Length: 271
Image 1: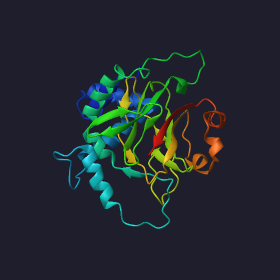
Image 2: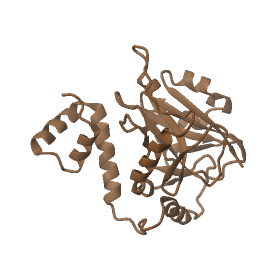
Image 3: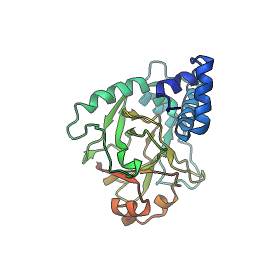
């Protein structure tokens, strides 16, 4: 069976497929890693959206909701880590996701030098080289791509947009390295005191898609900084990036460390 369209997987998760078709899709997903991962991600997102949440968005923007969440997380923690960002619940951004996706699609055609185009690859080239990644900030319900050399306020809400992930599963490590060399994680989320997590499994999508989570950096140092995304063919822990010397986080070193990976960097300035 050919992999079903993403809309079919969504309909399956919502219980909207005829039972005969649903059985066929479930049987296919049992043998297909890509479709199984997509269904798992959809189930997680659906569960988040249906869960009861105190202080739901109401008429507030996702950014205002995130501010409220962060205010409740300000109690002191033991052994705080400057290299760890505070993670904001995916629910706030998921509530605004339809609008964010619409805006992102429009920005694609109006951002010089940032067009999303299909990338071919030589026969046998890693699928990761065809993946598209760009960082952005969230303002209200809008995803704004971050250009090379942009000024990035320390309290900005950050996420990423991905595309071209059809095919074998792909995983991503995404972080900011500030002027002091501290690492601030965007994906996966990394909470103080928690065990080091593994890379984020990317959803399967051809068209640009905004990730359903965002972060606010934890007191980043002022000065030049780099946003870095590593798209991998297999899941990897954050430990190497956390422990690496600063020079080992260059695109060249990361490419050598993770053969076949796509490494994307965006230089920014934090005031």
